[in-house]
Image 1 (cartoon, rainbow, N blue to C red):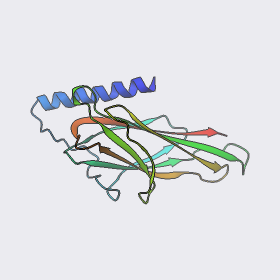
Image 2 (spheres, helix red, strand yellow):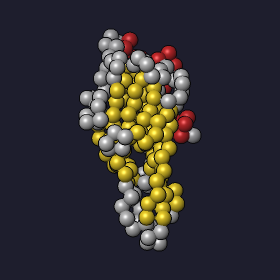
Image 3 (cartoon, helix red, strand yellow):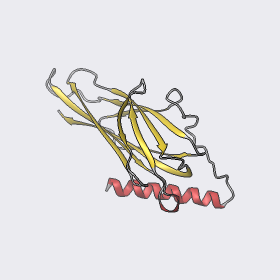
Length: 174
């Protein structure tokens, strides 16, 4: 069901952008997160707690050569469990690139705060990208983590049609 909702949201955003373009708007429409073209300029998405529902944002890779960086903090919001026992967390980052006539091949990268690559999703074509990263913590300690998300076009595949970025943080074991 989540996948259906994400694709539906991306198609709705693409349809809205297409309507704006037909109304005479320019082909390059910077979104409200710009400038976010470097790790230092990353747009802060804030904190996402482990018991929050999936969060989503819509933005564009436009003009050609645009790269988007976002920062987020995955927060250990629970302290339930036997102190000093292990607990496991999972962050899922999803990307739905523009679809239909504006379909584009975008790639997704997950980095730490220094820019070191933790994971990537570089599927061919205009399909969804997804990164799932887990880490182990200890009950009674703050096991929150800071991440940087990078979105870039494969090649020179920019579009004024929005993509959809999703983030979900779960504690997978008590």
